[in-house]
Image (cartoon, rainbow, N blue to C red; front, side, top):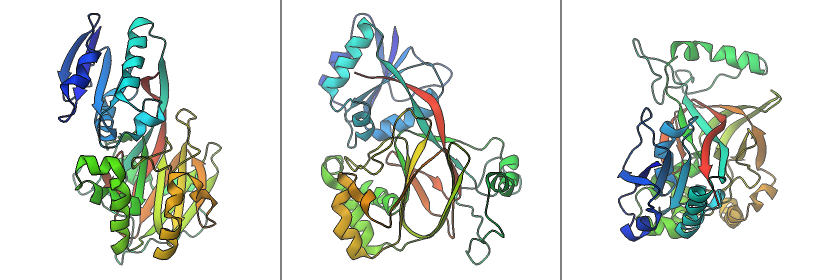
Length: 332
């Protein structure tokens, strides 16, 4: 068996050594080539390390084993691998029996910015807003066919536009700002409450952007959410930020994404309810909207950042959708 070990720079050798086995040619690397995939990929790292191999593994037969050694290991927790020891047990079972592979969904973000003349990809951060930064209100409700027609020109002109896969939760608004601050923190602090500190730091200067969301569920029913937003989270797993249970009802393989929309509210109310995000009880706050979706179009008066898996993806406008059964995982 040919296996690639994708190892983050801070992964200690004593963590890697137990995964060496006479039955496996385990070679080290820092990336995966989409056209030269091994039989198995083993990633030593956190959510960001997993995120970086998704372009190569999405919709492929190569299974992935996640060994949680990063500063944020939320995806590993969601698939039942909270520690390197649990990953090793899953690895040994796979080598002996090969019966512990699970197929899960992924999220996809497709930037939908307008094209510059001669460009083959959408311009990151380009917006559908008018010259004054406002998003025109549609003359009538945007049904699925109308929404597709509205975006048809951008889609048709960008046949080769990039798709960005993510395994956890994509966020815009306050949580994206928190990610930006968290990137500057040392890894040990991110692992132990750093994301919460970053969120509080971001809240101090946060100005709620105006956002339009058009979501379509599995039956094609449309939900429209618009206005100034505290944050919006869309994802396939239920937690991020080292234990924040933002999407407590999410399932990894139901062919849908969960969406949590929180409109702008006073900073006092945010602080009063902040503790709720660790238990998922923030869904009880009356202003919070929660729904299941297969496809979301998001636009904003001014381009704002979208983060997922702790990584910057792109800026609005964008389409966020589900890639059903796109990733094979070795699990306990």
